Length: 159
Image 1 (cartoon, rainbow, N blue to C red):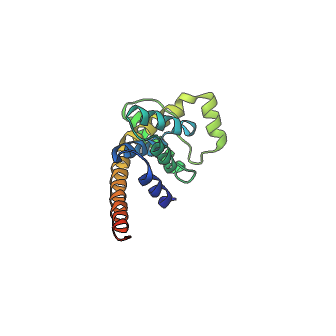
Image 2: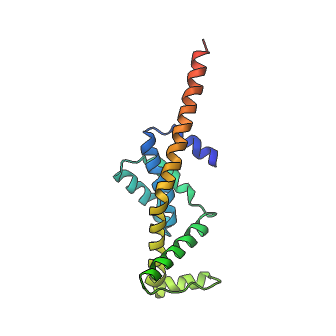
Image 3: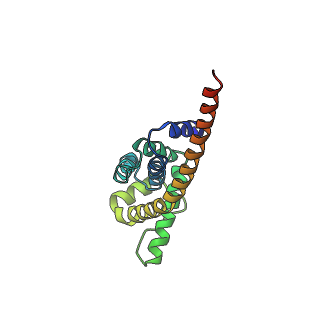
């Protein structure tokens, strides 16, 4: 999958900056516990900042069934820390979280759990965006230069 993402990114039309911007929005928005909104949010943010829309879609692949639990646990813990720092009230997450607990919290007291979780997700999104941007920018720049060198070599020596 990593190789596919690499090849897909270097073949996208657009500047390295626009590709890195779009990818960073797609990857960083995965920290928010809003799985139905990741693609829409990444697309809107990319459009607003002239980032590459397809790169934002590729970036959302960072969020997957394997990474969501870790990313969302980090978002919840970040939100918990932020709420404690500002003295805001929130529900303590039990050691063994069950589906029933989450459904009960969301339906009975949605603000106690969801608001800190979303808050933490947006904090991690803001903190991770520059990291994803720099990593993607460097990778696309390096891979495009390598591709140009190889393509230039083959076209010069084909005759």
